[in-house]
Structures are given as structure tokens and as C-alpha cells.
Length: 127
Image (cartoon, rainbow, N blue to C red; front, side, top):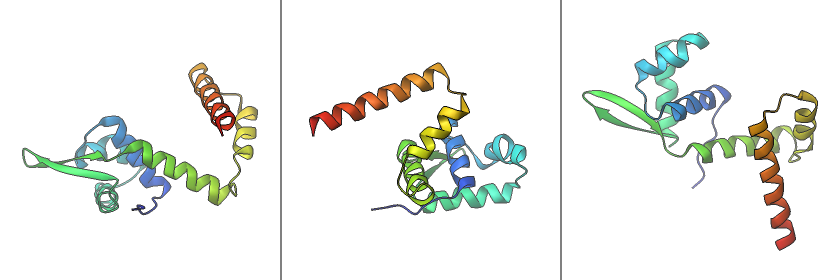
């Protein structure tokens, strides 16, 4: 079953929650909302929407709901896929060109990109 899409702000919050592991609305407000100029009620609404869309799950711990992601990698890949399809009309070339002009690629990111290219090449040769 395909999950509903999410917006940029929801994706940013979801990424933050994924980094924290498990978080309460209060913690999300202090750590994420306040630096972004968002109210606690906005964060609660976003977290509940993400839960309704099955991107977050929650459990009660000592009377407080703690939220965590259901599958962060799947969410990020879906968001990137939607961006490539919607904004770049399915081509990754504009993104690669932007990255090459940006010039701010860490050694770790470059190694990751090289590994991905190697993986793509091996898949292509195997087909």
C-alpha cells in the first residue's frame, strides 16, 4: 500500500525524529519547532498527521506519548523520488550538475556517491 505524500516541513520534522530515535511532542517543540519559529500546536498537528499517514508510530511511556519513525529510509527515498519525478521530470542529470557546481561535497558523501555509481554499473552489466 502506498502511503500519502508529505510536505517539506513534515519531511524535516520526520528527519529530526528519525535522528532522535524517539521523542515527545514537548521535546520536538524545544528541539525542532522553536528554532524554526513553529508553535507546539503546529508540531503536534504535524506529528499526528505523520502518524495518520503511517510515517510515525507512538507509544505511551509514563503517561507521555513518545513518537518514532516507522521506516525513515523508505520515507526519504520516496521524497527524493517524488522530487525527481515532479521537479526534474524523472532525470537526475540536473541534480548531478548542481552538485558538481556546488563544490561542497564531503569525502564521505563522495565515497557514498562513488559506491552508488559502482552499484548502478554492476546492475547495468548484470542486465
